[in-house]
Image (cartoon, rainbow, N blue to C red; front, side, top):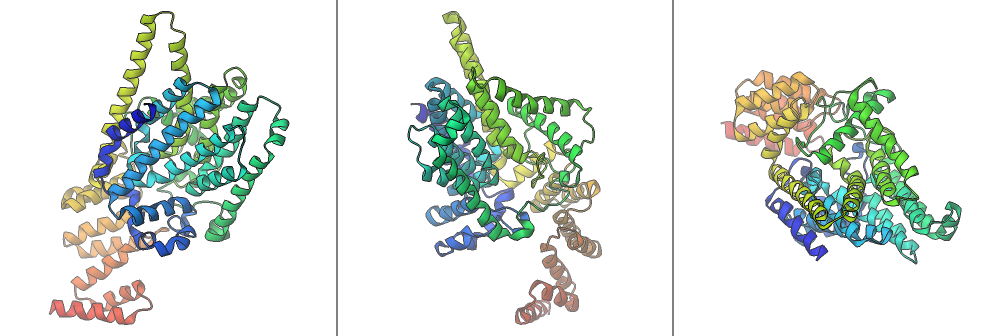
Amino acid sequence: MFFLSFFVLIFLIYGQSLTGGFVFDDRGIIEHSELLSNLGNLKETALYPYWTVEAGLYRPVTLLSYSFNFIFLGSSPAGFHFINLLLYLAICISIYFLIKKLFRNGWLAYLVALLFLVLPIHTEVVANITGRSELLALLFSLLVLLEFTREKVVAWRIGLWLLLAIGSKETAIAAIPLALMVLAIKERESWLGSVKRHFKGLTALVVATSLYFFMRFIVLGPTHFFGVKTSLIENPLIFADIPARFATASSILWMYVQKLFWPVNLCSDYSYNQIPVIHSFLNLEVILGLVILFGAVAVIIMCFRKRSAISFGAAIFLFSFLPVSNILFPVGTIAGERLFFFPSLGFALVVAVGLYALLSKSVNKNSSIAVLIMIVLLLLSYGFLAFKRQTVWLSEEKLFLSAVECSPNSVLSRSNAGAAYLFMGNLERAAEELEISRAIKPIYSKGLNNLGLVYWKQGENREAENLYMQSLQQEFPYYGAIENLVLLYLSERDYTKARHWLQVLYPNNEKLVDSIIQNSQEVSD
């Protein structure tokens, strides 16, 4: 009945995602469909970066999951969304088993899993196909921890689950310290004695991690092995000094916790300059974030012996948040609700322990009913908000227009809204949004290209040409601007310039260049 309730709730809340398409970052799946959809390319897929070498990411398990989606369920986005729902179901079931085995309390385990399931902050991960990496990383991390709860631990399974977890997303490295904590809670013996007893299992963790990083080095090479290379637009913290990075990350932590418990104004984008870099620790949000961060450390230590469930919840939060926090090292984005998916499990555990304590310590039947009503209302409220929120992920138009409302100071949100209006044929609104994007920071190459498209459609060819050129001159150029330059020059019958850019686009295919020029001349004539 527990698992049936998980299934029903997930499909009630997220079932409408089956009607959604490929949106936002899902474009990477479509752009690489030729690679991913061919059964003969599995080896190449396993040795392919995610999605480019420059991104500094290696997630072969996630890419292979897309391949199996194509091969067994076809190219429809419904098949991809369906697998995401099944993975979310598997995560909730795994949470139930982990908490039940570790703390020997089935009702607490059910409450933790149920609370985790309905959290609205999870909508980005579940309803967006590329949330797959987060889903797989958490699922396999839970399987690592579950293996350590067994009476007889099987080392090869530990190694396999961890390799699959880190191969889904690098931040699953958090499973290693959490596995050590599971052993400490389970064994209740000295740390040294526990290490000796589970030497094979712990060795499997080391071997799996080493194998992943070896493969990462082979695929990404020494230049991109140590991290992501991205622009100021995606993550301004890459260019900030360490104190500013720490202060801003602490403020963002407070934002995450707020949105976790009070899930209003959820957003798909927090990039430049929606979250300004903070250079002072004398800031209320920074202070509150630091209290949560260092408070988690204190709770892990102080509650370990008598309230181990709370201690474990704090550990889940801390060890899974640090790799994505931009504190230890900068990641690919300044913030994203998907980054709090794994850490939110820690908060769900702590809150569930508190609610269960209220219920179990109720002095009479009336107080018990009151606590139950409070729990039910909380779950229903979160479930409704999650249902409502995930509707924006059904199409890019809804997503981009909602993002500009919740993140009006973001270059990306304004640019994406402009693109949405461009596709709708509303050139006036498209130009308005794209000009705002450029005014915030004129370095986002896709936005400059899209603004060029607007001016071209309005007949202002020289302004369009200038914007295409600016797009290609940025540190992270958008090469689609080359195609747009070709189309502009062909429309003007300037075949000399069109040929130049076609040769840039197809440097080793003069025959194709000649064919395009000839066909264009014939159509013009």
